[in-house]
Length: 132
Image 1: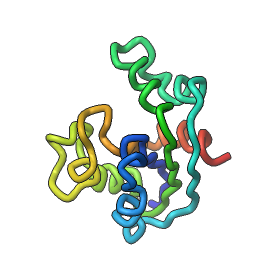
Image 2: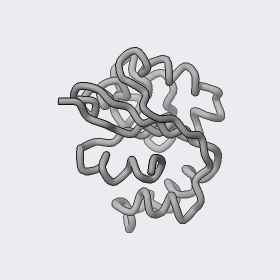
Image 3: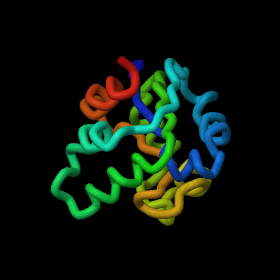
């Protein structure tokens, strides 16, 4: 089934100038249907990560995600959500499979280079934040 999904290159990866390297890891596996670079406002980050509101890491996540520019990628392809999660790797880069984006560019659970939608429901919620 052809799906659309969202990947965000986070501020830690943009600061490392890893945008091109990360895009090259996905562009041969997915169709890039959209790309945008922006700096999230505090309000946008709070709304985007509202699912985590009340958790101990919520405020630091919002602060981190607004600390620099991010790149949103609208990707599509067969089983795109599941396949992208495999390319991205585990949330904790130290547990990510070698060759995944997070293993290569991530530092810790928060500074893990990218965000990727984890379900069709989250993709449907997240995509409009970057692509109207």
